[in-house]
Image (cartoon, rainbow, N blue to C red):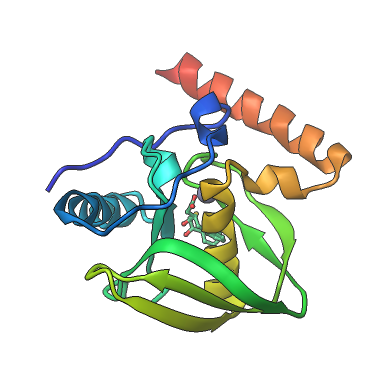
Amino acid sequence: MAMLDILEFPDPRLRQVATPLAQVDADAKALAEAMIETMYAAKGIGLAATQVNDRRRVFVMDTSPTQDAPVVFFNPEIIERSGEQVGEEGCLSIPGLTADVQRAEQIKVRALNLEGEPFELDAHGLEAVCIQHELDHLDGKVFLDRLSPLKRRMLQKKYQKHRQQAADEA
Ligand code: K1U
Ligand code: ZN
């Protein structure tokens, strides 16, 4: 199976807004399957198509402790949200950086599965955080956009240093 390259912040392609799929065809299924492989290889719990430079509105997620229960969301929409939680987030497109981000605690999401059939999922805790994080990617946003300007500047400086160090060592 093809492994996909993950774009790294501040790549401007991470800012593109994804487009809904007209149908879940064989090519869309192949993309989702390659995204699942890529997510596992990168040791993530989610991955959005935007992160692998594809404009289609799809993300994959696996928050199971055994990492053997992938879920595919084509054309996802949050149809209900309630409560508030603050939790630590990371991002495969911003390696080495984490921050506490405020999100809804409970959500209901509607999407199409790998077979193109509609489903709804009630999610809370980490699952709800991950779904909101991936939907942000499909709308061209990253978790840094949800922080205060001061915190965002601090973390961006830290990230630049981290990248420079990695480049120097390479
Ligand atoms: O979309 C991505 O960049 C994947 C991202 C999803 C995510 C993780 C944690 C909270 C919200 C969204 C990751 O998988 S980052 C790697 C990871 O597993 C992780 C990092 C920090 C905290 C918890 C998990
Ligand atoms: Zn991310």
